[in-house]
Image 1 (cartoon, rainbow, N blue to C red):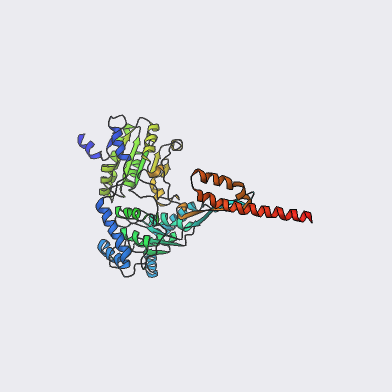
Image 2: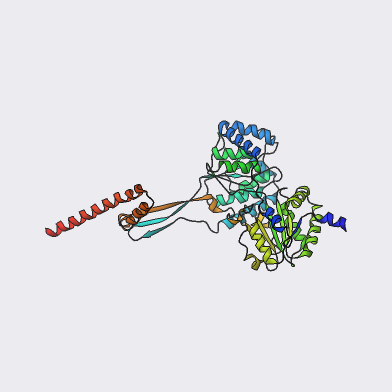
Length: 456
């Protein structure tokens, strides 16, 4: 019995009734990791050299880190055509269907410019415009991510960003995977460059001979990419910081243990730093889920990665009831929240913090990762408390519009001057007063002209 317990207990088990639970759960909640000094120094050096040297430094770093010797950094038409011929037609169809569904979702509600006119000549409103050029970072390395291309590029395409530039590290042969190039084509990407890492972020942020400077960089990456995005922020906009993926499952007695295990594994297989957590009020569910995880890992291609993620970063938490499950989920603020319950809709009403909520037994996180429609670029590391999924808003900027005609300034000008005086900013008040003086003079001149006409 002891041997069986040891074999199946892959996920650590916590109970909310235990004395040390609060401390243990706090470690799960505070999962964001600060950048290491050696990483930050390396990234700063890479950024500085790319800014100074440009394309030649990009080629040198690509040889060093990716083992690829490049001539042209940009993917040419011939490479796109080759990718189209190489990819399986069924794969092409699946990518097309995913792109269509994601595009349809993001088209549902695009913010538009608006304007209000007030009596007296006051006009105010907001002008909404797409960013002129954006950069999409698509990771390589441990897996192939055409879905990342689709999710990051399509919202920009929907709002008609004039130029969408994609970067991704090449393989040793100096090429990108055909699935990634096909995804770029169906997602509306305009230009693709075979560069990755912090050097690709630097190129997008500051531009080189070949790579154009962008207004915003989005997309996930490793610790070096994340650190580089944070360093260039301010010179260019970025999306929210992308940490390791995470899933939290709330399950009651109607849940199927094998399905829960599969959902936990599906996120754990991404990365050793991924985090998968089950919260349930049922003690009996713990062993059954552990057994299923052990069984499914035996046939998983990325079993080593998933096992390490689950054992070192994951947990099963036994709560007293569903209400406590939800309270813990709100505190954790997961990227993905799956509610495995016949009563999922009611339970979800009490959820305040989650990047995406997957309702019921037939909605695995995987459908959201690929083609449900909503974006799979979600807030991680607890930032679901204040960040939202990637969407069309992220590729738009708003400009406020204000216009006062003389009657409106005459109506509100004295209040503006009073507020400026409260703050001790006399120059602000003077800028209004000078205009009011002219308005008053013009008014006196008009009145004098009318009186002169009456005297004739």
